[in-house]
Length: 418
Image (cartoon, rainbow, N blue to C red; front, top):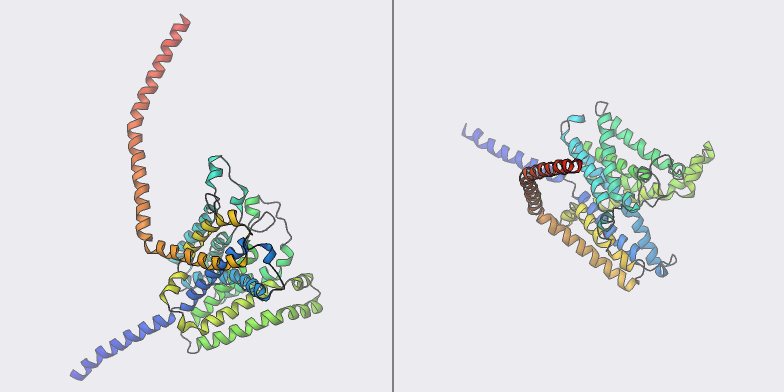
């Protein structure tokens, strides 16, 4: 009996240790690292693109071409990772459909990103003049990611009661439709929509991003997260995932155009011919798969706390970079004073300094976020209480003033009549 009782605690300790190791191994550190890499790439990309003098934009320069190529990878990676993370958290909980608590959280998050996207484009100077500038209605990354989250929730809720393969199948279909027909709907003007809605679908008015086709990267990211969730306990998950990502990446980058050419010869479909004129969506998707493979290979090195904090602070970093570079609220950003006027000797170290500054400020904000929010909420409550108190004081005074004015007017009218 003594031996049996002594073994039970050992088994329990072993099970606890195994569970802890499993939980730790199931945490996808490389995804946070990818998001950190993407946001830093976005910072330097926006800085250099906005401030580098056009004289130095030499397409024959190898270094410039390498920078330009990697800059083109940033947005697809960011959208794909965003779709991956949101869906990974969405489908991990036991509840399904509308009962899933992540659904309501996701709706709030999507609406929050849309609101922040519009807020960053506000100009207080224009508001003081009673104007809202046209730039306020343009669509950027935050708008598209917020709307993508809402779109993923919609697909999830509509397919929650279906068989398990329906949700990932719909995700892949959405990506394929958006990518295959991009050259068709790209030239549509969407003139039947008001401009603030049309900006979500066309760049004709100056929008930087549009929900189509970029939602396609979010849906393929969601599809990848479904695969990771379903095979998370598979012994050879990472070797299989890395090799698959490399193969798919190679085929999309180097063979997709040839495949579309063959497909066009067989079918004669005009949209396939249009893809051949600029097959950037599928090539960039291939780049995304290669980036996934690289970060999965290096996943053991992706547990640095600072890197993970950066990956978890992308919204703060984005907001701060937008204010400093583009001058949200005031219009007094670096872009206004140095718009495409700097040389590489200045813009390159400036980009590094810009990345460090935005990241540092975001991490400091996140460190004191709870205190800052509590101070803001206290200020709002204090202002509200003061307004209520002012109302309680002013109502009787206002009522008395109205009565006295009314009596004065009655006497005046009587005097005029007499």
